Amino acid sequence: MRKLSLIIIVITLAACGSSNSKMSKDKFVVENLTNYDAEDLAETFPEANIQEDTGMFEEGTVERAYTVMYPDTPDELHITWKSEEREEIFDIRFSEKGKWKSAKGVEIGTSYEALNQLNEKQISFYGFGWDYGGAVMWNDGKFEKSNLRVFLSPEVEVADKFYGDRIIKASEEEINNLNLKVSTIMLMN
Image 1: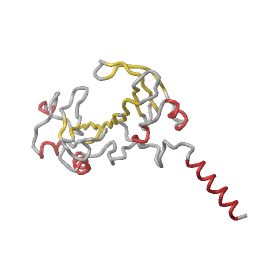
Image 2: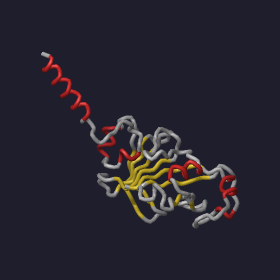
Image 3: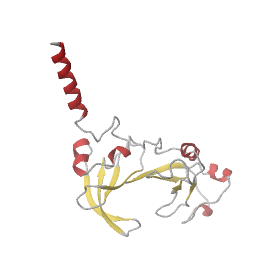
Image 4: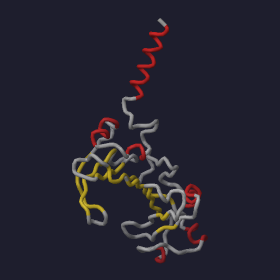
């Protein structure tokens, strides 16, 4: 009888563990979504009020299908797809301090200093005021070969010298005075 009970328990645990093999323990880690298609998202996140459409991306040069999960909430997440069939994710992005996070330890609100520590090398960033404003360059640090892209925003008013499509050159004091925080996280697939 004990052997039969043990076999039933093992089979039950195996079945429960395989119900969604794409999902790890934390379903709000964006890296966990990279192998999902639209159907997987709907099954795993039935409460997400998923909305789908197409739109222009990459500075208005490319039309892509997209999905918005948890619209108009702190957990809002945008997914763009490689095709209209929504079978393979192109990228995932979010910019609200909700449940979503990166497996790398980067979250919305992560400071410039903490980002440097996580990257294990000094980062640089682009100027503000354009589509890719605040984009971070990993400079051969720990995240260089990752698909993680982050964007910084200042928490203070900034001088004109911090605007534009160029890598910002400034003193450590000037950068610290900007009080930079991660404002958008994007995962390329």
